[in-house]
View 1: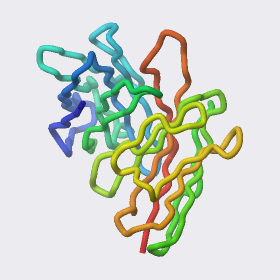
View 2: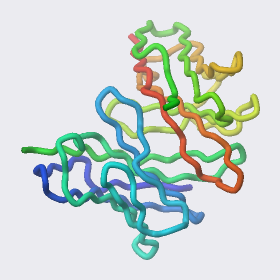
View 3: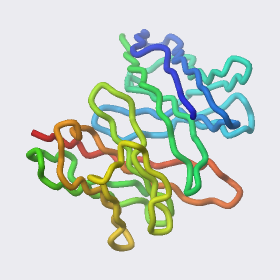
Amino acid sequence: AQSVTQLDSHVSVSEGTPVLLRCNYSSSYSPSLFWYVQHPNKGLQLLLKYTSAATLVKGINGFEAEFKKSETSFHLTKPSAHMSDAAEYFCVVSEPTGGGNKLTFGTGTQLKVEL
Amino acid sequence: EPEVTQTPSHQVTQMGQEVILRCVPISNHLYFYWYRQILGQKVEFLVSFYNNEISEKSEIFDDQFSVERPDGSNFTLKIRSTKLEDSAMYFCASRARLAGESYNEQFFGPGTRLTVL
């Protein structure tokens, strides 16, 4: 079984400062990993994904994540936070199944961006 | 840009009543999913659907739940007799099938908030 642990339930940063949202995973397979973002009253939007290509993955809105197998981590970073980044972020691992891939979500990290 | 839509956005029902949550996946997608998120908890997989049949379901997806693709566009989740603990946000997702790419993106709808009283 696969699992994801998001180490911080809430992160607060000032606008213009770096963002770090931490994620560790457990997987029996060579994992595919994703970060999704959920803005209030909106659906889940894919930020970026790792699928065994480059270990440093760039996503939308200036976010990136680095897959580190030795640390079983997939932390999300952004050099400079913007007010519009305030949202909930989910680290997700994909498990191959017979009919497609099943996603296993972390508990989420609420990002607050202050002026 | 194509998107997954869900109706209604909010459904309130009495315990024991049947509810049907509706989803319109992206039109050329072949895999369909339901997930739920109980308030304050993580998003949980319920069921996946491909080629007009369930391909996998979680232990949450018991006999009270069913899914259907009644026509070429809709994908529904039915809860036969709702319980208080079914109150949650329900997300529909769909995925294309691209040759040579196993883990392509699932596109999520905005969710239906189900409140069981």
